[in-house]
Image (tube, rainbow, N blue to C red; front, side, top):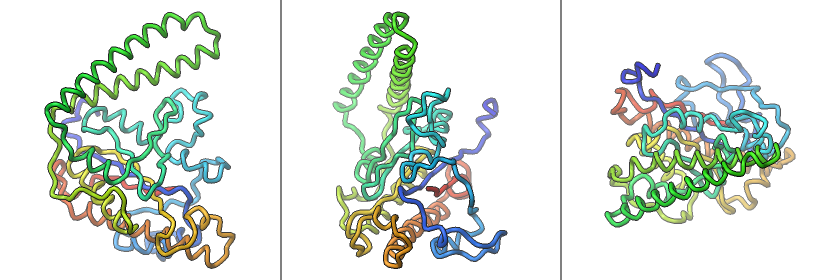
Length: 321
């Protein structure tokens, strides 16, 4: 596969999630086969029915409640990462490692409406938190000036020198430690090496200009939830369209007062089948599915300049929780 990489089409992966799951009876179809009746929460995706598959009865078997969010893409709790040869690396970071510096950003982690994004994990059990609209816009389109690039070059050199010193000093004490301490030090050294790789990847792109856009700079804070979701989805589509990255994870959230709801998101997830709380939860989740549907619209409408066809033709989009 590597030998024929020049003829291989470019593939991309986008993962959407939320912290509190979906209301099952309004999400999972009752029927099997292609002509199932769309439940309420899937109805926004009706126009994409022929491009999607609903997976049911999949579970990592971890009885950890909301704390299961960080295990969606790996199936391993961070506290148990040390017992696995690759730690609790998530599937998006596995893909990013394989792609290396193919794009400016091997992967992007983003968050909508204050969500934490605990989806992405390195093999050293480090959670890569998400960024919001303004930070995402700056990463995609804001170029450093000549002085700023020179300063960043200097920082890369300084950081590389510091890491070299750390590695040399660590090796001198490694053999003097007990087995448990050696294991902890090895984990630390792996983190240092991953930083080295990241700096090397970032430095390759420092003096290459970012793509230009006519999209206005987004607000630091959006008052209306729909405005923030729409702006965020547009930026994600542009990240793929400009080939700034091919791997994205995004966590959906909400703020108090969104959708004219009186409680916080978490409270609706503990609904106890009370109608008012269930209706609030479905309102939140249906809006999320509407945003996913519009994101798929955007990909389906956009020409794929690298492969031909549309962006959606060569992009795997997963929603899970």
